[in-house]
Length: 462
Picture 1: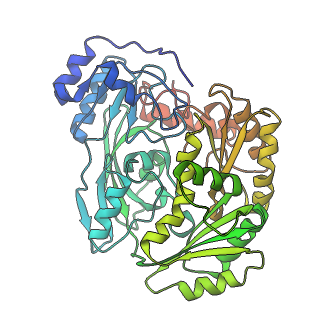
Picture 2: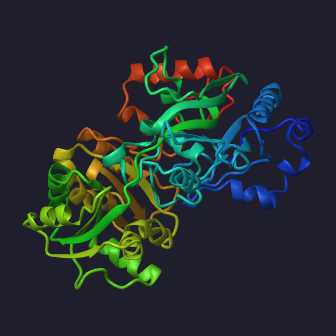
Picture 3: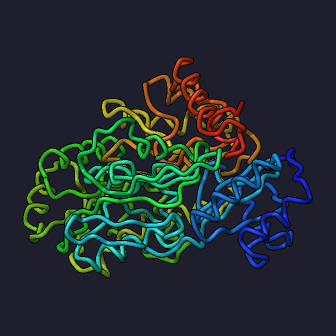
């Protein structure tokens, strides 16, 4: 989806930014800035006259002041792994890249917490936690490039939400630069702290529209060194949903439950050169992980044996084979992208209609785009379905409209973990009342009165 730039920056802004961060960290070469102006899917493409790369919170403050005084809009950006156009300068905004804020600054092994600047990758947080004898509860396929600031901005979920919760559940404090240039910083990490509004919870999921997150205080979780992964073949989506729901009830060590369908697994196998994972193809697959301080193999085996609809299974107890089974699920995004820029519609459903809606989605899409292909997969343990559609022009929003309206009709959410961004902004009213939208706008005006922070994302500025 291409956008015509509408912002024009004052030429005096570039030297003003150089004064703040130094010439090497102000990028104006179009060949270089182009990589900051397209999202991971390739569907959202913009342009930016300048990318500024601050190296500290103090520099972010000055960048905001300079942009505000020159009436220049800013798009905060981390690893640029977003999928809804939320971190792309679609209207010619200045890009504020946080990638230089890339070193964990404190690990408190006693409290089980760490402080991470926003440019640290998710993998970097996981490694720092492990080095201190802890683990981090959020994990997703883009761990090596997705930054913790981006995770906070979109309230990322990932593979283990059913065990540990989403990113907001891990955040104990935040440091951020508001649209006024003011800094809010509350990084003490107290688990119980009822001193007013929880700004860290508000900023988590705000997609850079209220403030530029520069650091976060994260809770850690006990490590679960014993890990068993099983891939189950099932006769259909309904069977996969029923199996996941039963495992949630009977298997306390369950940490992940992911579903895939026959077509998606075949696509992953072809694209990545992988063998079929089981002895024959199955209409649906359920990938489950059990993990804990003790070996969960016996409990997992008993739980799986009690599932009447399982047709076949592969089990891995060692890290290498376990990762190989996860590759079939994590490889979906890469494989789907090989078909061209997809419509990536990340939605969630209530548990009682989850199976029905998985089965219904291809028909919903085919009704408006019969030439398309639909790829369904996701986090069945928490109701999150990734509806990916290929064979449709990136600018053709009929598919998005049809899917989002079908989701809203059954009480689902049009955004489970990727955010609203630019992609879903026009449909936000399907899941939020007018009063809620007005409250969002009031908060935006209070924290970003000039509307310079990501003005085309989530809520309207002004």
